[in-house]
Image (cartoon, rainbow, N blue to C red; front, side, top):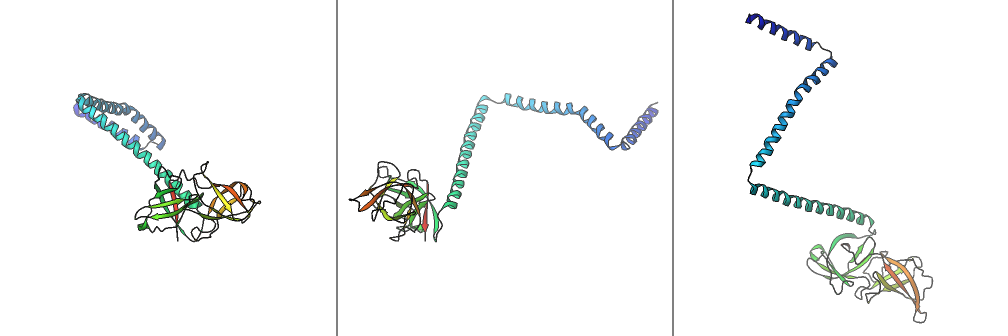
Length: 267
């Protein structure tokens, strides 16, 4: 009796295998889905059981261990947030510098990036300190600019840092010309003026044709600043010394109050 039953089971299995092997592709796929659906709850039960075991293991840990782990995770979270902020700041700086480099005036010089690292509280409008010294090739009188306009010149050189005399200070006289009229003049201190970013331009002769909005660039005279560097634009003019020459108020292109990076023009 046992052998007969055994043979019947074996025959049934063999018949089932033959049927499965000869099923069309679509029917075989539907059969697989059906079988998978039968066993899916078992997989879910296994996952739930594992999750329950994990939670139970946490319940068995001492409170001190759990508190220590929470503090560690909080510290790690703070560290990751700081790193993310630093990364975002570095990316913004990189994009800003790439934009600046593309907007710098063209010429027979090599612009060298320098970062502003210090300013004197009492003479912030006269000088600034940059991280560019003799070891990097800094020299007195090298022009310092931004894409928006002239900043000044290197006045003092140290090994790792240099002091920059800003445009408008008495130590940084600049020979300029008005681009539209070709009138020449000079910008020289003292500073500060009553309004930030404003300096005075004195022409060499009376020049009533100079108008508000005219562009002012370096003239190249004196050999310190290359010709054609942007300086600013005319705000207004007035005759001076009984009409012998013209004085103009000039708004600088570079914002000297917000300098983080500057470019030094190397020969």
